Image 1 (cartoon, rainbow, N blue to C red):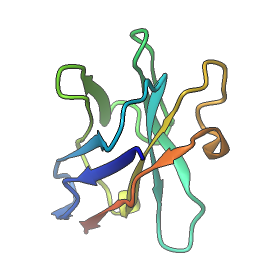
Image 2 (cartoon, rainbow, N blue to C red):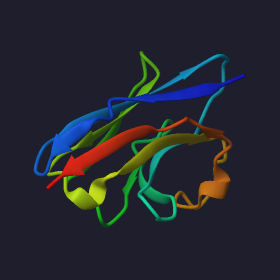
Image 3 (cartoon, rainbow, N blue to C red):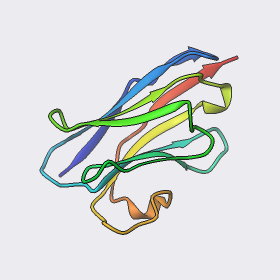
Image 4 (cartoon, rainbow, N blue to C red):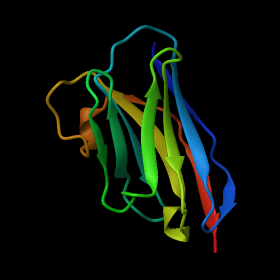
Length: 125
């Protein structure tokens, strides 16, 4: 049973930085994409960023472009989300998700079969 586990969330001041990590364990699978989603208080879960395991493909939501960077470490089977210039609006539970689909709309969470439990990021003003 594949499990995704996020870590790195914490309270940070506006303008600060955090790095989130997503680790896969419990089985072998070959994801095509791993993505980050977030769900703020009273909001829908939204797409943040995605990284391809098969190409150099990256994708970002407009709201985080230029501030967030998604990356992967093949050797450690980890995916990171580096978040800089954090704003109070970035406050949310951040989830990593993985898919084995090869053709998909990355921002559509129904395309992802594997999800972590989430890690809380709180940005104070």
